[in-house]
Length: 487
Image 1 (cartoon, rainbow, N blue to C red):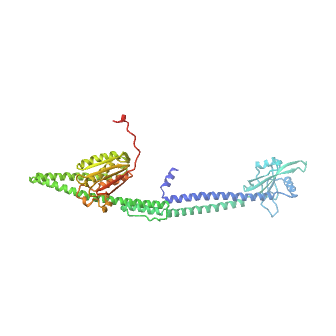
Image 2: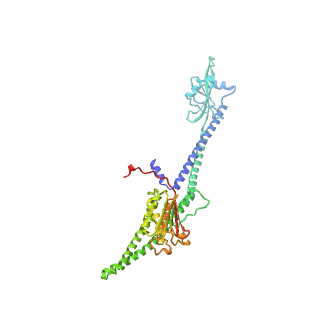
């Protein structure tokens, strides 16, 4: 059985659907056919029983016929010159159950204990109708009725029974023909149902075949431009599956395009510091090989340039690693963090990078769900941007209130036409391309804030400069740590 189940599961789905439809139809047709056969059988037997009741010996000659049968009692029918045989079996049972066949009888009927019990219960007047056989083993329908017998010699009265039967050959032939017809009709119905199920399965699974071909084409050619046509008004499972496939391939195509763009932009950004590093290192190497020393001031500037390019490379690689991390890796580190602590830590780093600037801060407690390191890095990037564009001796205002962080500098500001691009990867304002940076800082800020469920905007500030606004949803305040559990 398990082997059949496993084999069934290996069949194509259209074959399984066809077999299931055929099996369901076969069960229904079998149930209807069997019910029909039994109903017809009951009706035919009811008709035969009615004929038996109508053929019971009646009239004044009844007693004479039975008495003649008893006087000339034989257990086999006597030959008769009567050409009109009515295919009727008639015989009388004596009190002891001995059968006496009448001359007009078609044959003798085999007596059973049930027939003898009718004689025993003659006083109740009940009769028996059953299936039986004649002396040749042919099937007959028998009715046994109790009768009163009188001994002509002694005048004593006793009970016997009269048995009347008709052959069932015609009835059985009709039932056999009906069974054959029902079997043929059922077979045709099952075959037709299987063919119809196969046709329906093929028509219903045609969109699945198209989807399979599309998936195989994508796997073979990596062509993500494939789309499956879907009717707009259709909302069945196949249409939903097709729309999901189209959405998936569209997302994969966009992801690949972004990946290719990231690789191209990263290669372009890496080329500049690497070229500068190579040039500076070649100058130092040539100086060592030729023995012609570089003036101290030029050597110092050269080494400072190498150091700056190495710092820029390290920053760019760190930014690329941050962008390449998957959503699952970020989700594992998300927890309730204090935004106030993250901003204070970022402020300490910003003051070190811009010691000549005045950074004012007004911070209120606020908790949110985010990755601690990523949140602090995002705030650092915003502050670095403000430090980079602030004039010497300028002021940076930082404020955290009700989950909204604002960082305002007093630099030249961002032109209005450039505001839609500030969060794009590797995008840098033409006026800022001479300054250090990879163009990924604000992109990382936008991604971190969005993953935390917040929003970030950059706009021109009234009176000059730029204001960055970060809004993050709140989270339940974590319980205070037990000092006894502190390390």
